[in-house]
Image (cartoon, rainbow, N blue to C red; front, side):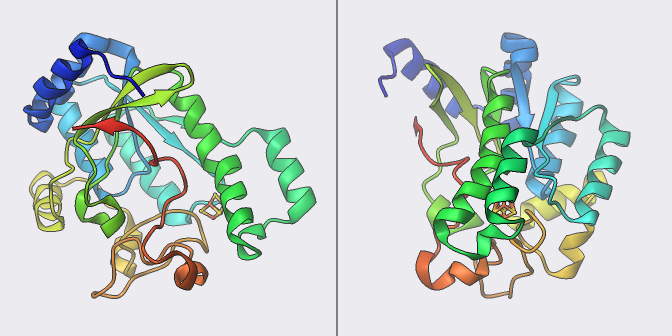
Length: 243
Ligand code: SF4
């Protein structure tokens, strides 16, 4: 990926901004082409609350895999009631039907390849559709999520089809204590699964509670722990070039 000099300069300028300034800049500079893409975990919800104060009206997009926890659907409804409309991107019906007909609903148990296939159909492809509608993608990635994410840049360009879009993780260097403090101070709605020991929330079965000494994403696809080590990603956040 080649990033032009002007883009490098912009990356440096944006990298020096705090989260509030990044949201305000994005809405001013890109309007409806800037959006928060979130699965409504705590970092995403903090971003939405911040955005509502400094860049009200920014779009909020999510991928609904159609296999989320009941608590997550209830939480999404609560967030929508408080902060406004959420654009939900779901799996393409024909591709989903074909996958389930060929491999069954629980194909992710069979092999790593089938888990990745399921994630492609239910997550990555809808996420790609969501990203087609943006030039600036705000994400809730944090460096303390796992050792695989420890070098996550705050601002980077990523390829989206034949173009580059900005991917911004405004809270990339926040830790859990800072997120928790913001949630408490601002009374941000929280997914009830956190009270049940979850530290990373995804689909039913594929995300489970974690122990205190584990990585936040250790509860994902537990049956692959011996194979994967700590590289627990579905593909949405792999790739990119940033600072
Ligand atoms: S997390 Fe599990 S159910 Fe959800 S898309 Fe990936 S493999 Fe499928």
